[in-house]
Structure formats: structure tokens, C-alpha cells
Length: 314
Image (cartoon, rainbow, N blue to C red; front, top):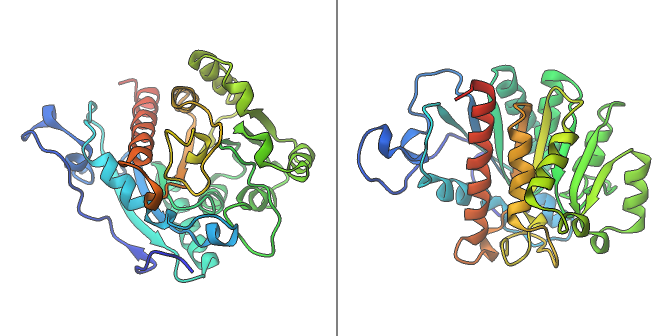
């Protein structure tokens, strides 16, 4: 059963955060979100409050509270651009009806993509990625995926879980392109590596990334987007070390340092090719001093800034 209880769809909440005064020179996320008449906003947040998939996958539940924690962490971050930012509300899994929540998420993401905004989905377990990507697929067809994650999430099951999203996506199309940065060899069985190879997945291990500089990581990410016109960036926060991201469903024993993950994400955003972003597996129940939420919020803010600069030139 999902741990959050709300209507299937709830409108954007009232944002709050630090206030240093009126005017654009004091702008923060909470003061600009949904405050502009520009339609559509170039970036739109959408919450997916779900951890039913985590439960089915044997993980620690609590990720359904992730969207609210991410909004809180974003709220006081300063805004240094004049672009509109929107919040389209939250979809919440009803009990154990993950299929129904996926349907609602796909419908909303399709609507947002068709309106020419960049949807950033605030998860939620990694089951988020199937519903969000299916909406993208309906709007523009097959789109390459870049996942920053310790796990392939290519499991097979009788129903959707947080471990099956990319298996499900692979079944949508014969043109499945999937790249993963941060794979932990001890946390993925030989079966999963074999399945990844059969599907032509490109992956880089965590132990390989830790030997690279942030600049080298950024170059790898840019190279991964070279042949694509648009990409879906999925970030599972368990790719980070447990010391940086304790508040996740499955904490990493090694993980990839924050500055390297940030370099990967920002380099992808700086190409101007983002079609969809999801940030998943924040579990506030196990967070320490909001450490994970703050790390995720900074990633989102940096992605937004790099994307807006790339697509608008300012």
C-alpha cells in the first residue's frame, strides 16, 4: 500500500521559504513558482507521490513523501534568471493501484510535453520512470534515456515495481536506447548484466566513475547525448554515497561523489536536449538534516539553470 494518502491528483501546494524582500533581486523558487503569465512556462514540476513500487521491490518505503520534501528544499533557493517556473501539482498512487497512478502520470506528462515545457517529475520511487517515459513516448516517440543510478532497474515481475521501469519501457518500442552511469556491480546480479547486454544497454560502473574528474564525467555525458535530438534524464538518488544521500530507499555502499553526478547531470542539461527529467527515490523518513533533499534540490536547480541557458541563451 502506498504510504501517502491524497486524491489521485492534487493542485500545486502553496510554496514557502525564506524571504528577503520584494522584487526580482530577492527572487527564490517559492516567490516565482506559478507567478508568471508566460504560458507555458519553460520548466514545469510535477509530483508523483508513490512508493507502492518500492514495497513490491522489497525496498524501504517512504519515497511517496519525496515530492513534498523536494518542494520544501527548493523553496528557498535563489533564482538568478527571469524565466517562468511552474508547478503542475501531484499525482498520488491510490492504495496499491500503481497502474492507475501510472496512467494518470503518463497522461499528464504527455500533455506537458505537447505544450512545449520541460517536465521535471519529483518522485516517488523509481516506478516513476515508466509512467513519465510512457507519456513522453506518446508525445514524441522513442527517446533515449540516460539514468544516473546504482541499479539497472531491468527486473522482470508480474506487475510494475521500482525495479522494473526500464524493462517496461523497453517493451514499448523496438528502438530502446538506454545508458546508465553509476552501476554498482555488487548490487546487480549476473542476470541483470546479461539482460542489459541483450538490450544493448550502455553502462559505466561506479568504480570507473570514481577515478574520473568531474570534467571527464561531464565529457562522458555530453558524448552520450551526441546522437540524440532529445533525451530523458532519470536520476535515482541512490547513485550518491550514503553519506551524501542517506535518505533513499536503498543507500549505496560506495556511490558516486556528488560533484561527479552533478557534472554528469549539468552536462546533459547544457546540451539543450532535455525532453523529460525525473528525480526519484528520496525517502525523507531516513534523511538526516534534510541532507538528501538539499542535494537533490541543488541538482534540480542546476539542471534548470543549464537547460534554460542552453535553450534561451540567457
